[in-house]
Image (cartoon, rainbow, N blue to C red; front, side, top):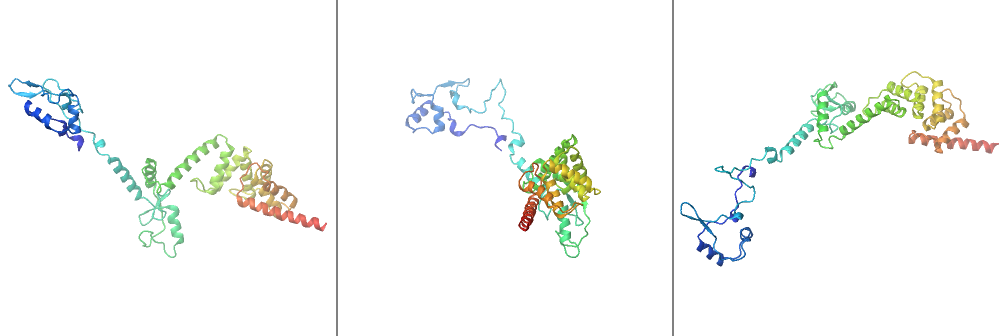
Length: 354
């Protein structure tokens, strides 16, 4: 390597000692010096044929006088007494081997590739070990078993095997460390990066909920209700967070808690208390509460009578965009518009008959 060798002056930058007469003849007859040699002669413009001064040493020999521009410029070496010039210290191995870091990244990527789920073709966020000894994403291998006719088989070997799955905690921890290092291929780690982002979001939302934020409580209720943001679906937890949100008089939380009470989701049914929460939420501008009341009056559900006038009152608020808090999905808004058109048709027909 270049860093391990002593710096030696380039041959083109040095002149060999010659006697005065031969040098003078050479200077007068030769062509223009190459650029490297020209650097040594730029300082002497007065007389090209002047002989180089010489010095007589103690042995009686004549040597050309030392010239400052003959010595290598880099590195500068200072000699003291009989000290011998030393070569520059060798360059650090890491500096001399720029591929070392690249090799580390390559090794990490190779290790991550061995943990990729062969079904999902991504690093598993919920890794399990199947009876064939391979690592899979839990959801992927469970879907494989359900879709398989007859005895379950290994996705890799095709051999028959049981459906028992073991949680791979160490594999999960290893994958998390690899992803956080930033050295894993982005495509393989997409699900994991989303998982880490979701975990951060849940942590921050839970912290807000614990200090009384009704909106954060409502979000946790929704995530537990549908198994989102990495949380396992838990309707009891969902109902509990909606109840806490309703207690802060957050319209969305009151609407969802009323709906859970009406339908007996995550706990016992309580139609009366459910209607109380829904009516309050609808009055505060929840479009979901207005939808639930409009549907109940339209169909005569939840112990309520069929009442086209009351149904129309609540459904029209949704269609006209009067509800301040919008958390009803597109399908619900479409239903509300269809029911309202049907109610308007009924009212129109009644007017014609009258």
